[in-house]
Length: 115
Image 1 (cartoon, rainbow, N blue to C red):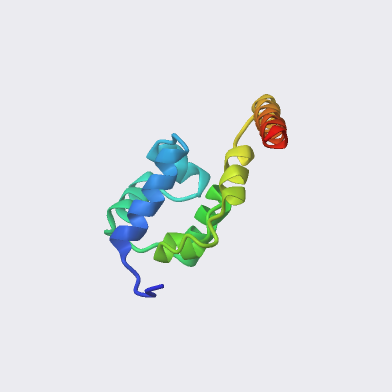
Image 2 (image 1 turned 45 degrees about the vertical axis):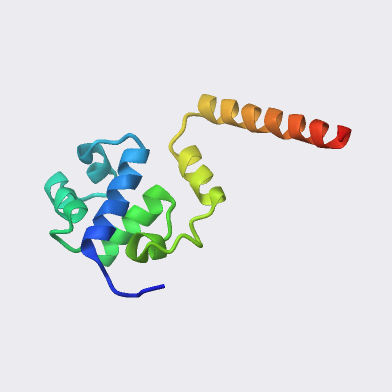
């Protein structure tokens, strides 16, 4: 892992999280308690983010700070990605996701048992 900070790459990773969550800059900045203008500057690599802003982004997205800062995806597991989705879903959506995962799990278990 290269420990050199690249503000443009950091901004691109943050933008990709925001877009993957289908959030506007306005809504995402509101959720992490910074201004929309400042978020735009971070996403373009024009400004650096503080430790507090990084902490807010990590908490809100479920990502790791290593991934945001350095692109190290080793701690950005599927479990964290799923938890990020669940964190921002309604109870009805969570129930649907659970049913879907459970059905796929049972189907795979049955298929692999038959082979």
